[in-house]
Structure formats: C-alpha cells, structure tokens
Length: 113
Image 1 (cartoon, rainbow, N blue to C red):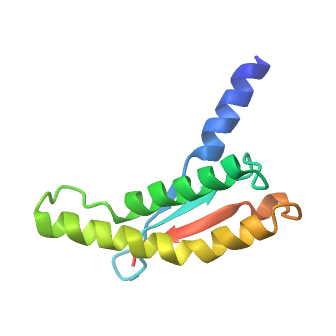
Image 2 (spheres, helix red, strand yellow):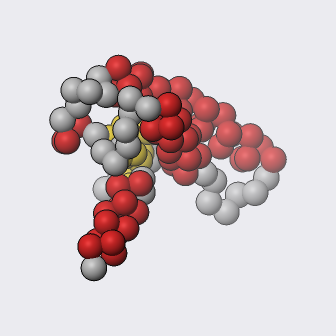
C-alpha cells in the first residue's frame, strides 16, 4: 500500500498543471506549473530533470491543437523556446536556493507568450 501511495505522489508531483483563462475576455496565455518538490536540485540529475520538465511544459502550453500546418508548427516551436527562456530565471533561482527552498515554493510557472 505504501508503495502505491508513493507512486501516486510521484506521478502527481511530476505532472505539470495547465491553466487557461476563465473567459474569452481574459487575454491570459496558457500556463503550466512545474512542480519539483520531489527532486534533489543539488544533484546534477535533479537539475537536469527540472530543466527537462520545464521544456516539456513549454511545449505543452504552446502546442497547436489541431493545426498541423508548417507555419503553426514553427510558431509553436518558437513559442516553446520563448516560454522556456522566460521560465529559466525561476529554474536558476530554484537551483541556487536548492538547500533553502521551503515546500510551498517548489514550482516553476511556464507560460505561453
């Protein structure tokens, strides 16, 4: 039972959450919250995994749903690169504070532009 609970906790901790605007009147871009409380950021593996999660979240918030044209795919890639670059200061701060982070500060926000 304990292994199952630990597995569920790990899956939840590694899953990015996407948020969309509540109404069409709000011009907010899609965003994802990348949680990293399960990672040891002081290790190279932990830092690499956090960066990979941010990269995947950037691709997810910028993905074109349905439009498979070359132009749309190019725009999605550009969006993902920008979203990832904008999230990197949060990642670098988390890595710099890896020994001092408190539990409620264990997420990076990744937003489409």
